[in-house]
Amino acid sequence: MSHLMNTYKRLPVSFERGEGVWLWDESGRRYLDTVSGVAVNGLGHAHPGLVRAISGQAEKLIHTSNLYEVGLQEALADRLCELSGMDKVFFCNSGAEANEAAIKLARLYGHGRGIDVPTIVVMEKSFHGRTMATLSATGNRKVQAGFEPLLAGFARVPYDDIPAVEQVALHNKNIVAILVEPYQGEGGVQVPQADYLAGLRRICDQHGWLLMLDEVQCGTARTGKWFAFQHGSCVPDVMTLAKGLGSGVPIGACLAKGGAGDVFKAGNHGSTFGGNPLACSAALATLAIIQSEGLLEHAEKLGEWVKGSFAEKFRGIRGVTHIRGQGLMIGIELDRPCTELPSRALEKGLLLNVTADSVVRLLPALVMNETEAQQMVDEVSALIIDFLRGN
Image 1 (tube, rainbow, N blue to C red):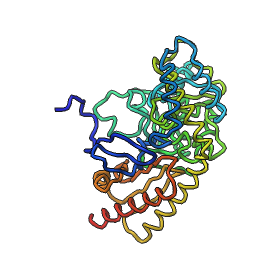
Image 2: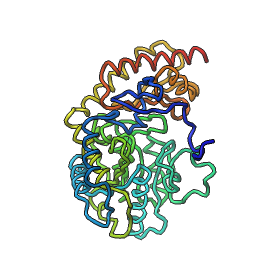
Image 3: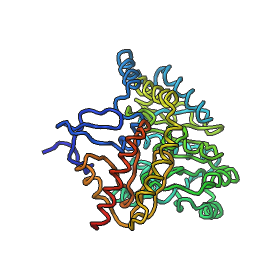
Image 4: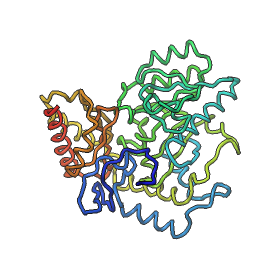
């Protein structure tokens, strides 16, 4: 009997080592990893530069707490603001905590404007985390069920629907912010129209709202830019990061610009572990390696090639309804549920993920090379075609 709580439906495999886009289980069998710890291991497994940074920092100092200044935290904040154009950063340990900080920031901002019930516009099919606030913001009843009563203060609209947001603006005077994923991950790798974020920016500017972007999954070079909002001309007031920022070492960040960066005062918010020396050393190394190895351009170029290759593989195949994504965040939507595919893939030495019941989600490491990408395309397409013909 396992003493672990039954919170995960795990696949029957345990890994003991990894290198690049490959993992080996306890019996020595090798697997091609297209999940990357759910968009976490952007540098792949056991990247030498990351290993050196973590081990070197662990030998010196792991944690002191935020009762004291943390030099590496200052350096990481400087670098993130340089890359993003933001002004201030709060560090925490996860995407849920980063989004929790953003929600608290928006509520405090609203109260500062004399709004008694500050309300945030959120999207259908979104996913922002599993704390009570981020769960309430999430647009997925499956993950909310059983945890009622949910928190008030959220107004939900369809994703990629500017008129719906404009209607909320007309009828709800308590709105203080919009919280949105530039590309929805858990919702099925949804890609909005090119002018969607710009439209949200316009509405926020008209009404004095904060535009808050959840880039937990699509940020940190995943889409071929440092941050997904950089594919357009829109700049947010608040942006959240985690996942790929620490390449496997837990770290989250809530970035803010302009007046939003001055909303929190000493004592308003905090984190015991957030931004400790070990986590910050991992994040600084991650950013440095992404730049030195040209992984932004690589992710964008390779992602376009992968999508095009899948389009060729699935030409004339009934059952594949859509291939979409940006950079190395790719979704293949089927016309039927395909939640059994991860188990089938495991048998063939392939690790993949299915989200929104019918979308095969691929999040390979940014260091994946062309040969490995070709193998991913060949194996994933063969698996899907075999599944469709048998169902």
